[in-house]
Image 1 (cartoon, rainbow, N blue to C red):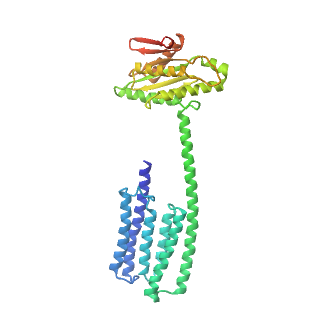
Image 2: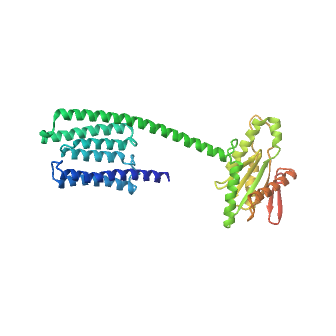
Image 3: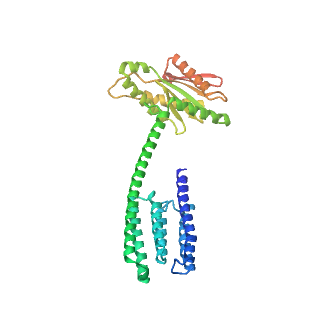
Length: 370
């Protein structure tokens, strides 16, 4: 979407520039009728129309997205150089109104001020001066009576001073653009961090309760519209309070973080793991039945029992849980409440077990007897 917006902006700027050149066709034809050119009106028409059509080709390149692979995707430099060369050719066949071309030069440079870097601005400025001098040389070599050296010298000096002013203005614009770009990147980074903090648990890196509820609402909507099923696993670390009391909260945080990493490594990309708070975690297993969900919890428990923490001897690590499948059209709160009740049944049954809901009742799996 961002690329489309950039492309639309490039096309809009190119079309506006092309409209300006189209108006230039009529202005030059009028000047030719009034005798301000040393060539016939037909040649003036060919020159200005060719200048306009050449620029129109660049507009079409942008319109058909053939510019995307170019380093300067906006083709700003190409448009400027083409117009500067065309203006210089027109100047070489003009009489009396050559100062209008100098103003057109400045307009072209202004066109690139907001897009080009400083090196490109310097190059375009130098190229413009060379083209201006080349036009004066052509006029002087073919029509020396049209050149008043003293007058042209002062006009040239004034034009150079104005160009220098434009360069300083371009430097300021470039600084502001870079500064604004840096602020924009910082803002995007800050927004990304805020977004992450809004949906993730700061300690474990898993999703937080609020985002879990949002994901459950989405899963519920999918299940209500189709033959889609999902399962919720409510897990709780057994005797975690004793771990905190005996080894301190910093160590307890290490335990929670280690369990979160285990959950993250055990789930598919389409599944969701979240920390509800304290030592309680919830898994959303998408497109899964109860038996498959139990298999996931069993693998998590087996790996959790093997977890060790260097330099600290702690009792065997166990967990309890409740597994419930979503039933249309119950609410998210009703689903979580059922899974929570199953978890507490597991706790009341001695912990280290999973209570899985079945259509005809509930089935308890005790890991100690497995």
